[in-house]
Length: 253
Image 1 (tube, rainbow, N blue to C red):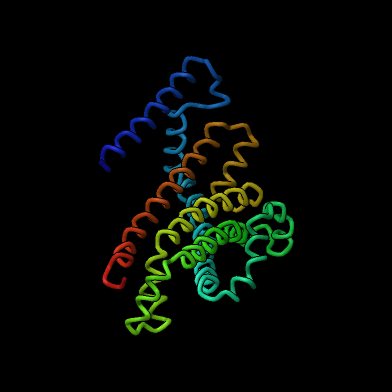
Image 2: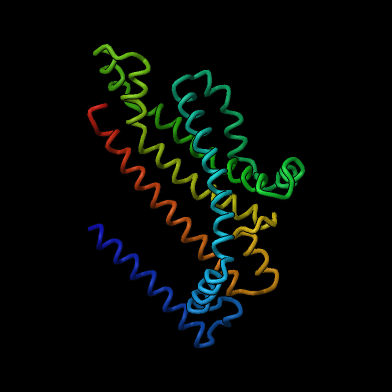
């Protein structure tokens, strides 16, 4: 079933690329506006051979890793604390929803003023965009654990820390993983958006530069690389989730 799903997904993607190529070659839509998959692939290959692609990807991944990594640490810590202690939830709840609801990109001039035109601004925006879903999903996952499981654990003499570590956290894995999956997309979005304005040398900066010169093919090439990075990061997270799934269903529960 898994192989069939992958095959059908790859087939549909191939059909879209083929239709794109045909429409562009036939002149139904000018290649100036949409380029062609073959031209984009050639541009990616040329950038890879020159070393520009590796440099841009390295910058973007470093900024993404710093922002998303910090969001994981802070988001999980706040989510667990708020889910386990009501007083912590009441204290941080206004800040969580402010960060979640506010158009953070509007604070870009402040980030530049505080952190300068460099990686610090990119990392800050990536962190703020991704920390909220991680915190909220972790909190929700802990709060929604069945009280019956916790009562059963306590009836067998489990200490509060045992209930948290062996019952509540394992049962919260699906919600935590969902928050991390949302966080990946938001973190990568934050990096790219910030790089559009910050000349960091990353993929977002490449998109802004080529877009300003109306170089559609090169701009779409950088965009495609970002899409591939997002897919790879999501799949890597799925592998990590599968690993922790054994913790959720193992003897600890």
